[in-house]
Image 1 (tube, helix red, strand yellow):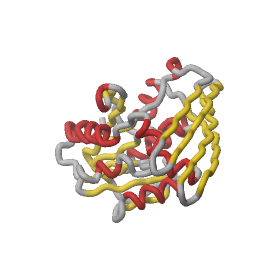
Image 2 (tube, one colour):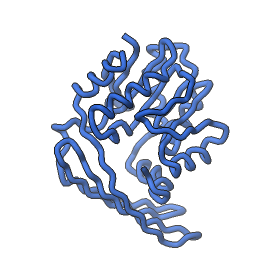
Image 3 (tube, one colour):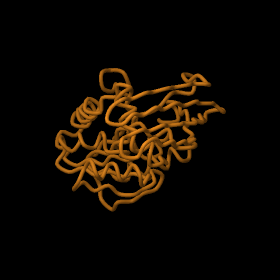
Image 4 (spheres, helix red, strand yellow):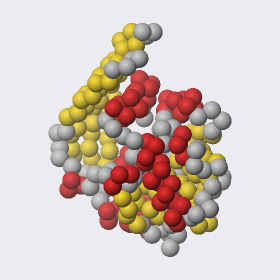
Length: 235
């Protein structure tokens, strides 16, 4: 759950780190259309600040988002007027409608355990229309993450953002403490801090979760070949 200051500065940080939302959305669209050429509707869950969704809206006739954090939903709603952004928990939301494509980018590691992962994948799969395609972006593998990671970012612009974080590892759980200073001309300097936990799921974990939802699990490269995507469709 992102607090207001971190939601407002989320994109500042990741854009400064080189995250290319337009290229990522284009690659996901390519993956979807290779498997479902007529795909016209897309659900992004969770959609965060709508950074990917804004680009999906240029490529699909109808898009929607789901987001648990009210502060992130607020950013997305301001960015995408006219697009439905629903409140919902990835582990068990229900919109009562289905989509040609469902995406879950940069978020699935927030699930705490295998049962939550399976609940989330099952929920996402349950929103697929016949012939629909599920695209999930995984996080680090258990054997690829080093404990004690420290990160620091400084972004200068209309507002200045300084963010530092430290992560510790406990088994497959990674606990990250974040501190953020935000300075702008209207509100001065604000400080916010938050601690959140992510899970290191293995390929076998993802395969099992997709299978439990009745989906195959294909692995493809992401934008620029620098990331991985998991693609599911009914077997």
